[in-house]
Image 1 (cartoon, rainbow, N blue to C red):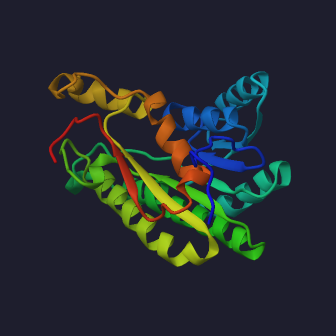
Image 2: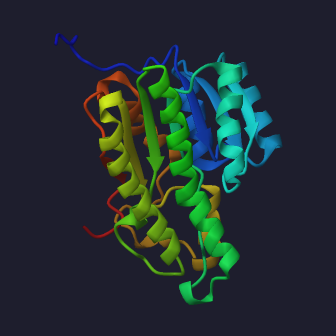
Amino acid sequence: MDFPLPNVSTDLTGQTAFVTGASSGLGRRFAQVLAACGAKVAIAARRMDRLETLAAEIRNAGGVAEPIELDVADDEALAPAIAQAEAALGTVTILVNNAGIPDAQRAHKMPLDLINRVIDVNLRAPYVLSCEVARRLIEIKTPGRIVNIASIAAFEYAGNGAALYSITKAGVIRMTEALAVEWARFNINVNAIAPGAFASEMMDGMLERVGDISQHFPRKRLGQPAQMDSTLLFLVSPASECVTGTFVKIDDGQGPR
């Protein structure tokens, strides 16, 4: 095959992206970045007021956005949310499974309803959404990109009541690897990003509980969402055509190897 030099592009014109957890933090940034590169973006989260604000910002910048109210823990709402996005914007060719919640309790003290919700949001929803998007792409023989947001906690457990969070994020990594193999023949690439400690609404809650952990890091800082732009764009762009079933750690050298 003949590829141009360099084989790199961030032009997502003609693509439709679906981003969960888009009302704040990393998801908000991901949606803005994808829209800025030409993708039509379905932004999904529970807080519709925040989604409307984000949609207005994207539209004012010349992009296309469709806000979709969605609690990813409600598994019966997942397929209809994808259908709503496709009715408004066309076939979803990029899925960013970003929504996630912490457990913030010691494992032996967690009530069953919290256990269920952490598993539903962090692992079950990404799996169901991935399958729904893939099924639609396979039916029309169209390639796609799925990016799962895992965590450095999938590989190292820092304690402080995050056992189930760590377990679910490890599950996201394994899910990424397994689905990549299953869907490779359909040209659906499945990859993951594993962030370290990044500034976000969820991180703000953690810092309130445990203090400023950044002072223990070599660079004494938290990561900023914008520092993930290049990785996200690589994983959804034509340049990553041969990259599937892998993960990229972005942790600023914060922890042990």
